[in-house]
Image (cartoon, rainbow, N blue to C red):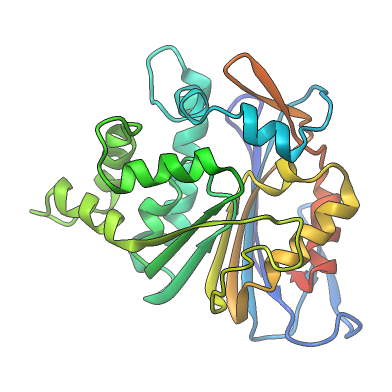
Amino acid sequence: MIINLKRNLRAYSDFIVKTEKQEHSLHNRKEEVELSNRKTVQPSPGGSQLRFWCLAKNMEVAFTEKDFYAEHFVPKDYLENYYSFSPGKDGANTLLRFSLDNLHQAFGAGKCGRLHTLIDIGTGPTIYQFLSACESFREIIATDYADQNREELQRWLKRDPDAFDWTPVVKYVSSRSLKEGERLESSENQFHRAIRQVLKCDVTQPEPLAPQAVPPADCLLSLLCLEGACKDLPPYHSALKNISSLVKPGGHLVLYTILDETFYMVGQRPFSCLYLRQEDVEEAVKEARFAIQ
């Protein structure tokens, strides 16, 4: 049983929780354990793992409907806001490093072993989440609802000169994982080779990747997606159940979410974010047949 709880990064708080997906009925009895003033559940042995990191901020906007998001979300603005490693963006840079460091802890240097497939739910226009994961997975499937996000991903995969420049982020991750004598170009080539498909995804549907038929993955990854796609808690619970159907029994789920937040900015436009507390996430995770340990 592992719980790491710490508070840092100015206004941000984070915690990592390992969980196991139950391969049996939710009605099976579980032993509850109190640790660091956080209630946890001890599952039966032999299942899958879920990790989630939560970051806290605050404000309020109307829910961003799918059509509005598809029409008004500008990938380049989002990437410049949060992923450019630019001078004068200390908060965004700190948060990005925090994300990269935790993803490296989860996936880097083949820490999961060499598995076959990772499906990322709600990739957006970003690739930073794959930079460490490609060390552990032979095949990565990126998914997103918005056409413009998938198009931005394809530009990067095709090495289009108009694609967002991820070089500073790639260098940051590679500096932690490159072996002596290994060149950055070989690392970048590995990233490109690992991403095999870019598919449309709708987490509000029972079959999020339909009409595409994709075998269950060894691992699901979802960063900052479900809280943007769901208006309130019942759809959030349903979305977790929907995506859980995409991971094989004994597989893994890595979930990165935001607590106590109601919006985020892309350019000058606010986009809604479902206000979540830790207990809301834990309840939804359990209802989706995961048990937090």
